[in-house]
Image (cartoon, rainbow, N blue to C red):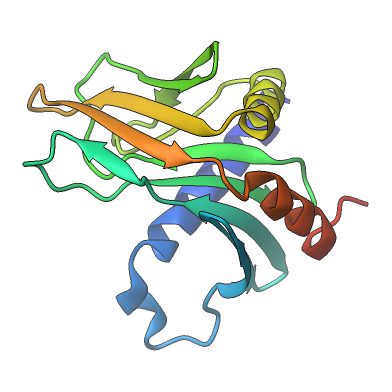
Length: 176
């Protein structure tokens, strides 16, 4: 399970990096395809060779501090019909030794970052399932982190449309 989990995390990080650099797509024909949009969430599919990647994504509706500029994205992806994997591209380099907190209603989750300190995810499939269930029940997700320069950030994500987006994800990238 450990090696498989690490493989999917590495694949997901590479995919996120490609997704966040649109210029990379200018010379290729394998751009992610927007399938639908529900509320504040969008559903995408992408094929890279024999890999099938489906995901939903959203950006914050509110950010603090207002005088800083960063571009986070929250994803729930499914690679090759695997289970749903939540992850975050925080939009800046995290301070070493810090984690990212995600709060939905009365539940709080701690995301662990990669070596670069810009992407984060939960460490177990059980935590991932719990986070997704909390997202389905909540109306807002608040994500807090600390930049390498010590700036504390707070991103507010709307959960409007997340249930319908997850249903669409099931439809376009069903688990077999």
